[in-house]
Length: 339
Image (cartoon, rainbow, N blue to C red; front, side, top):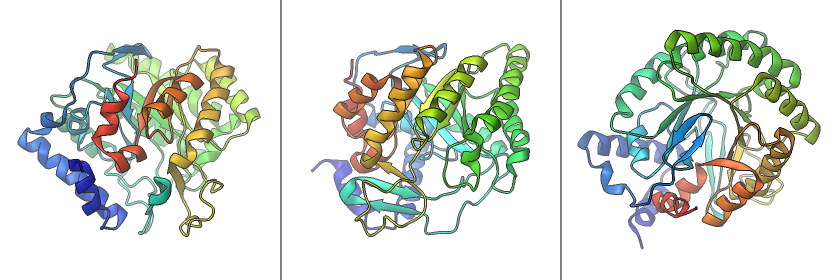
C-alpha cells in the first residue's frame, strides 16, 4: 500500500469538505517547510506550446481544488505543468450552505455545490504572489461573478476580475458553466456570451498594451450543451478570437449514477461517470473549431488511457481534479508518461 492510499483511507473517514481542507492545509505546511520537492516525479521534458505559452507539460490541475490559490508550488511539485486556481469572484463569498461536497466512492466521483466559495480577487492575488514562488509552470486564474450579481451586471464583475488578475496570471479562464451559481449557465447562451466576451476581449487587448504582455483568455463550458449550442458558440469564439476552450465543467446529469443513494443531491457531478460525456463535447468543439482554437480537456481522467482518449478527441492540454482525489500524485506521474 503506497503512502497516498494510507492517507486517503484516513481522509475518507472525514466528511468530504473537511478532508479537502485538511489536504490543502497539509500541502500549505509542506510549502512553508520547503519539502514539497520530495513529491516531484522524475520525468523528461515534454514541453508544449499552447495559447502562445510554453507549458512544461500538458498536465494541469483543474480549478476547484486550490480555490484560494494557497498551494500553487505544492501542486506544482507533484509534476503539474500548470495550475488553475479559483473560481475567484470580485468580492469574498462563503458559497452555498454545508454539506455541499459528496463522494460517490464506488463510482470514483464527486458531487459538489460549493457555490464559488473564495476570498475575493484582492486576497487571491496576494495568495498567488506568495504560493507561486519557486513554481516554474503556468498559473491560470479562473474567474466568475458573485452570486448576488444579476446576469445583466455580470460583465461588471468579470471586467473587475480581468483587470485585477491580468498582471499576475499567465492565462485567465472565464467560468460561465458552473451549475452551482443560479443562472450562471445562461451566460453560455450565444446572446449573453457575445455581450460578455466581446468587451472582455477588447479590454484584454487594451491591457496587453498597458502591461506589455499578452494574457490569453479561455472559456470554460459545460458538457450538457446541445450540438447546436456548441456550433453557435464555436462560431462566436472564432469570430472573437478566444484563445482556448476548456471542456468540460461538471454535469447536472445523473444518468451514470442514478442508482446511487447520493444521486439526488444537487450540484455538479465530476469524475469517472462524466468521462465519455466530456469526450463527446471535446470532439464536437474540435470539429467546429477546425483546430484554430485549442481545447483543454477535463472530466473523468483517472488513467493514462483516459487521458489519451481526451487527446484523441481533440484536447491539446489536460486537467484533472477528481482523479487526483481518488488516486493521489501517482496519477500525475502516470499521465506525465504520455508522449
